[in-house]
Length: 330
Image (tube, rainbow, N blue to C red):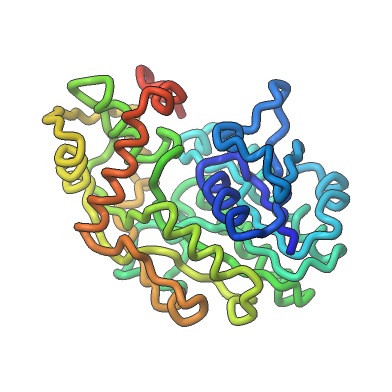
């Protein structure tokens, strides 16, 4: 079975590629073209010796490229996206070009090449601040940032191809992932990388709560989705259902790091008032029903264990060197 994975070089993509290769799948890993011939996190994993992976440089915004390269594949997993919320405020068109028009190219290629399944990646950000909790897939979608708006549009476009052309589409909607290799645009690596270099760390809004999920739990959700006929035409949350406030998260990281660091709120890390998403907690009943999936790190004890794994990875100087901590970067 051949799987074409976009965004393969990133945080989640590298974990998914690594896992699927171990399971014997043949992978084409699409990497965003760059003049440095850099494989992203795939370069660190030294997967080039594996016969089960092909590295491909390109861009999902190139329709003819995507059409040609996805031929003779069984499944496409679309992970490629612009994901930074702060950057979306200043570069709206870039988010539409990649997250929406890039997906359009993938949908057209999937239809013409008769792909057996397209797994498209959504985000819990499409829900906005929870109107009720836990959030199921029927919860209203609220475009509280240009990023969220681009993903809402992309999700709806993907579903339209299922309804209009019978394209075998599944939308997976992960809630806040964390783990080794994640960029400091996410809250957990933001805290950990600063803790490793500073006594006082800088954060944004502390009056928010999230549903944090260890990356390997989400990888398992994707594995269970592959060629799962029950999942075709469905949108499915992947989340623990455990609500963690940022203040509580700080306490857990203090415990696993054994560092009594201080923190302060910086205005440049706070979203515009009406754009802030205050609560995100997943209902995962549909994931259990359609995928047979439930998270293994679904309580505070297991969350602490996963945070310890994550902290230890960043603590290694070989890994920490990849992250720039001194200035806030959109």
